[in-house]
Length: 479
Image (cartoon, rainbow, N blue to C red; front, side, top):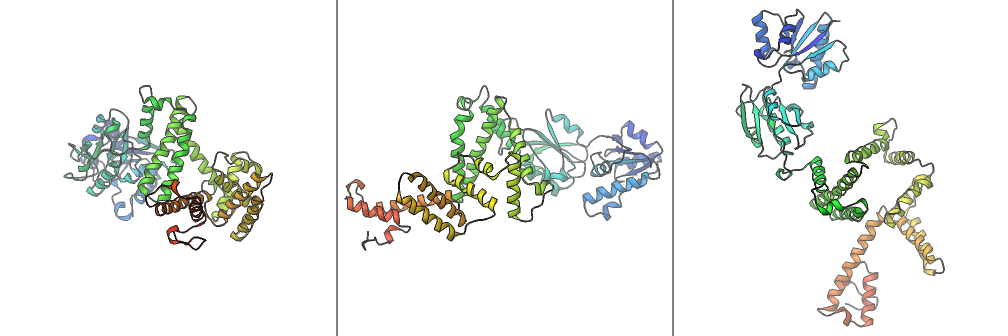
């Protein structure tokens, strides 16, 4: 098995490095990724024999298939002796496929990259991107972007749209054209240039000023909060602690839930932003106190999700949603060191709303016993508990609590979220009172009504689930 040397030969004959020239004259078998390059011209002028892999372009279905086929062709050639494999740029996908094959005798010699001169514009961190990989770009407006191999107008259009998700469309960019010239234009013009080929590269500058952006990524949000909580930041933000922010965390969670109930995507988007703000604020406060940082938060939840989904990221199996729930509960107990179901029940936060905590406790019970009440059973149990509560006595609090617990169980049996159901019922009660008040008063004051009238309206509001304006009272009267 011969040695394999991968050489970056650039695009023009004068881009060959001294080391590349030495290797090409070494007598080894030469394979070029394509003969449509300046290196092929130079080899012909020097009278040096070479072969190319141009035929693979016609026989392969896509870029990935082409990369694998080219790597395999180089490996086969090396079976007979040393091979110099010439590519435009050593970042070519076929080189990655070749190195991924585990060959020990593969050496890589870099050449002159097409975007070389554009690097001078990147004074800070830069993201180097292959245009063909535009769907997988992970961009940050805080970094420059240098995109290579914009070989067609169609590809430039896709890249432009991806870049404009992060960078302002009016950004001044520099484009290295195929002839070596540099054109300056706006980002929105990236797909309106006079020509494109595999040498075309584009440079997009970073945006330093936070106020100059049209869209903000997670990293820029973190930067904003770090500024607000910093030495020269906002006095209010700098004064906050985990404890002082606690009420806002609860409030924002409920407002998100309210936006979901409304079914308004724009409102939900806004409220999710407020909730995310709380996460980033707490993380920044913790970072300043040496407790943890936002990266620890994202790491912790990522690791947790992979542990809990061991049927996806591990060796466990779950055929249906019920099996997933069992596996989730088992993994959750294991990571918390809980050995019994009772321990997992006690682990449910007491700070949750009572109906929500009750629903979770009942859910753990159902999962442990693999048993769940149907609606009829739950309704009977609620009726019994309600009768005991009505009897009163010294244990009134306990009996009422049991009745409420049975009401939550009925909600679960009916497939209803008790917290949502109770909130909706309260809204309906307010609506009924609002309607009856408007009709009963006719411009007057509620305090002027007689006790008899108030009692009648109380029954109508409290006991009716229909519009009081359309329902007869229990006394056969109309409002």
